[in-house]
Image 1 (tube, helix red, strand yellow):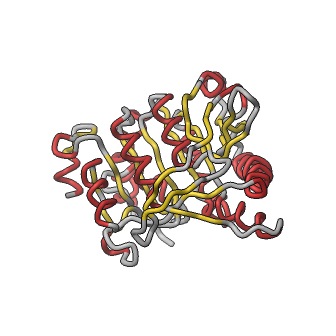
Image 2: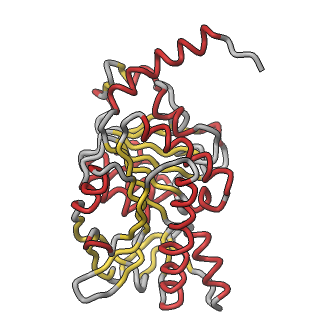
Image 3: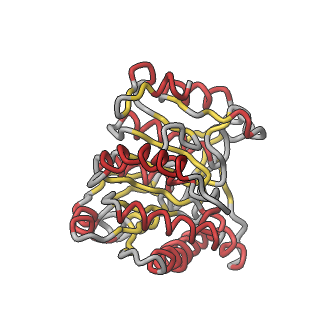
Length: 314
């Protein structure tokens, strides 16, 4: 296959301003369970992470592992229960989450990164008191069918605080932390924390420039069954309207809620993209148009590197 030199050079020139702007900035990248499940997709993400790291971007990776934890729960004799995109975590489900997420999946991510010469360190929110949480009390939730019900989520934790010092130490030393979605409390209890919420909490605590969700969806869709309805650019008010309309459901709901909190909590840009698409992370980061959904704090006034995003992405 021949390469057109003019296009290649133009692309490099276009990316250069982003390379300069992102050096020494912190990005938090959340890997979805679907991406983790596909070896080829995980290897592709690892290669892109390696490139970003070589360009001076400081990266923190957060992962869950819902599909893998569900499969292990079934092997342990317990059918998983998911309500409004969040897992009900009984004793067996917690055991499955700890074994699959903090064990097998964390090592799988580290191994994929090592294959691309990335120096990464695996840990969970329990390590070094990184994430403190309390047991979520029973709460009223609206399920994907619009029905309200009182739900006890079991061993599910709500984040109380983040102490990012261990992450800052690792980043300063040139390592990439890979954080699994567990948290603890002062009594020694361990909680399953929604990985989207965890990623958002870490991004806010680290004052990250970007929070990027790598999912199995091309981004936020007005009609979740029609990729042509992709929302390329949004602010928290836009997302709140989509949530209220019922357009966003299932596992996309906690991601969108996390984006709203991150955007209002000081994270400059949040993104939801298809993590399995080739080079999607690089395309989203180093091009003006991107490839998924970008969320900013105030759409009508948002400018980025001198570009009026509202005019560019409409």
